[in-house]
Length: 139
View: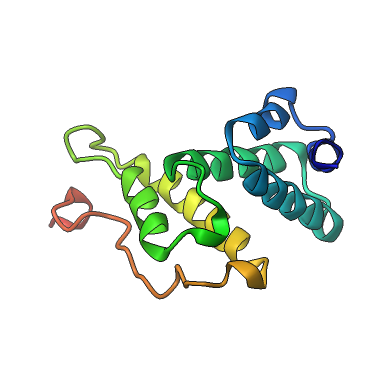
């Protein structure tokens, strides 16, 4: 049943995205498949957008040692998002901000899509997008 749900959710998406189900737990793979299927029903997602969501959620699950999404706490989400940050020396153009914002949006939509996941609110935690010592605000 899991394989069938994943195949339906990844229909039209590159095969490598469907194969990612083997790198996360069965419960997480089922949650991602259900989420993508629901999004496809409501919004008729493009294959690339579906693939990007699967990639981001898989990366998030692996970062948290494939613990069930239901067992994750707010600190796990924040730690994952913070892992996407880069120092000024490593990324002087602040390109990490786009990746950070994209993953934040994917996680917000995923966790807000199901009442079972509403254990915490990512929105309640404001994270500045550009470091305080950034040259972006220099005069």
